[in-house]
Length: 95
Image 1 (cartoon, one colour):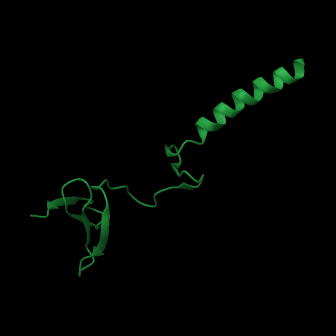
Image 2 (image 1 turned 135 degrees about the vertical axis):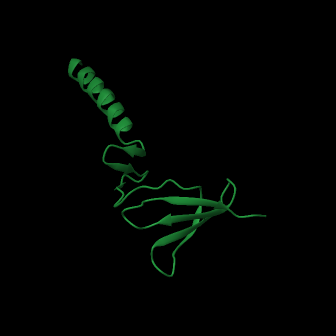
Image 3 (image 1 turned 90 degrees about the vertical axis):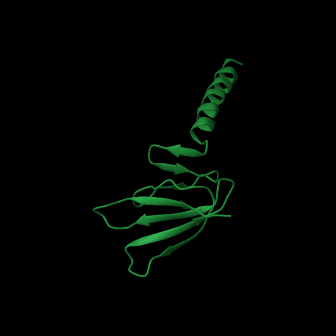
């Protein structure tokens, strides 16, 4: 009976910490997805508005343009790709 109690407590505590460790979201080594996979960014993370629909490079390949139109106001994000000036600009789309 005592072995069952110890085993139950060990599984209860171990199971709880396992569940907490498996919660999706940001982690120290990337981002944990709900299916258990972990993804990490390759380059610099740039926070944009919600629901990016398309990302296209400019003709001279110095920047990329991203179109976003989710819950927040719709607009364009111009991201400069040159390594010496990592900058981006936001421009709203007029309705």
